[in-house]
Image (cartoon, rainbow, N blue to C red; front, side, top):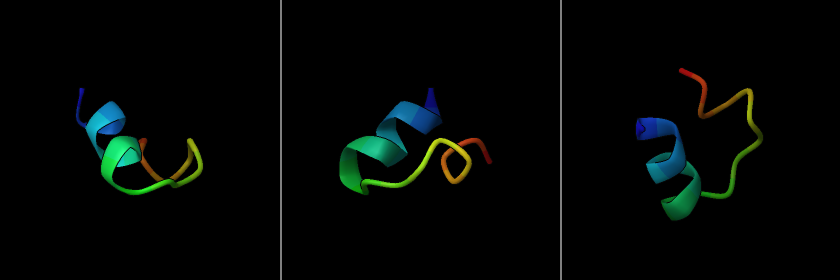
Amino acid sequence: MLGAFAVSMSHLPPSSYTM
């Protein structure tokens, strides 16, 4: 899950780590 990884290193809204 790249989404969870992106959120872990950068606190972004769900819409951002969906890509």
